[in-house]
Image (cartoon, rainbow, N blue to C red; front, side, top):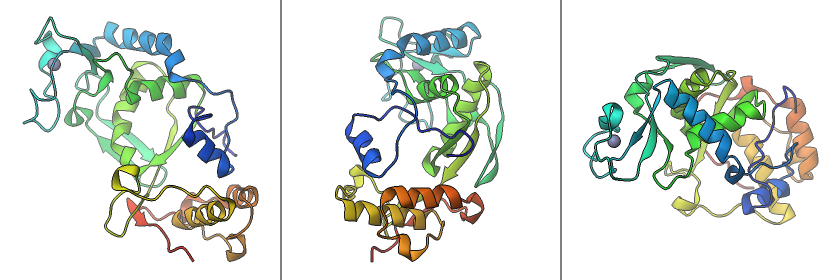
Length: 254
Ligand SMILES: [Zn+2]
């Protein structure tokens, strides 16, 4: 693809990796596994903690359930010193406000403090998405982040982390979510049907995805092999054709 866009190499020999392959999507580097990245994430967390931008928190979700976001009780010291801790970002002390230009939705501005002190490392010692994605993207030289609109409001925390860790700022493009006629996300949780796993269905769904992305593929592409559809899509891809709505319905299958 152009502009050194890369697929993140997280998926490979997993069910979702096989699904990407079936749709002709591949990755251009060896796959890296999150469970091998502990040292890199820990180093990033140490860097943040040394700047006073990360802190341990022993609170449980139950304790702050009456608040819209975690109220930051442990910012000045653990409230339960003998309990296991998660690590949180000091969203109030890191860079704010956060502004960026989304390639579809235009200028965005958030005050991350209103989003709360997001968890960076969980109580069960698993690394949270926000930290892992920022560290991995920087190391893999990701220049373009393209993802669903539901992650738009994660970007402020990720920008705070990038600034604090002196990582470069990628370009962001958030895409409308495909939803059911009732407005629900197409996800396992909402019992959406699985993606096709045989060639005819795969070709048709790839074509519908191009339509859902406002790319207006020519109708004779509808049953073309996935490689031909993707070649066409790469050659004709235009952000300008996308209409900036947060969601849209899956086009009717013909
Ligand atoms: Zn706490």
